[in-house]
Length: 243
Image (cartoon, rainbow, N blue to C red; front, side, top):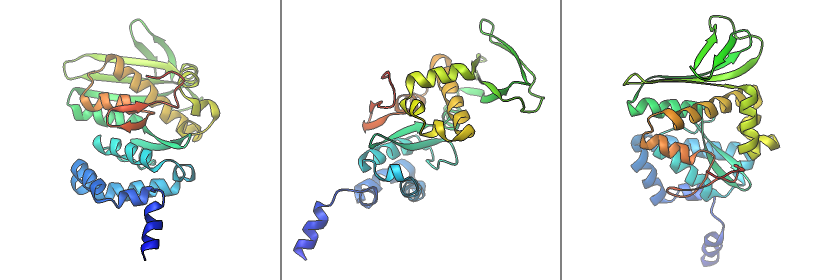
């Protein structure tokens, strides 16, 4: 019996054993209240359904999950608010464009906010000086995506429109994302995955430069694409240039 207990004690931690720890359960309860058990179940499902994530450092998975919980964002990849993704043996926290919209609306500082694809048959021109987008969104989504437009209006009436061509998004991704260059991760999850990451990129850039950044939005901005080493301590192994 003693030998069995000793063997169990020497076994490396897994995300399952970590989540059975009472202090960790308590931490999630403090962050999420009644939603904690559902979040923990979702975390187990995410970790088990991704073979690469299943082999990642469980402490990095837990740290990414705590970040998501502190922002009160679901990590179900089908919802698109936030993801926990594997990279070089660790787990990264990654924001989705829906997560940025959610946090902006929660701040109470935004009347309107959106980010969408712009298709070839809709697009005419974009004036970067006046930020006037000439496009007919009553036309069907046809001709292929040529770019992405983010827009917000704050409660005090300030408006901002940013348009990035698809080529500009790809240049940015090649510069800042190793996973994009190597063809894996959310970027590589088909056309829908690329569009989701492109919209996140444009909206994140627009909010960080021109928006009113609540504490939650600042945390999301810093934690995005990071391996969370400790509260407020982030490393960016997927970025060729650290933030």
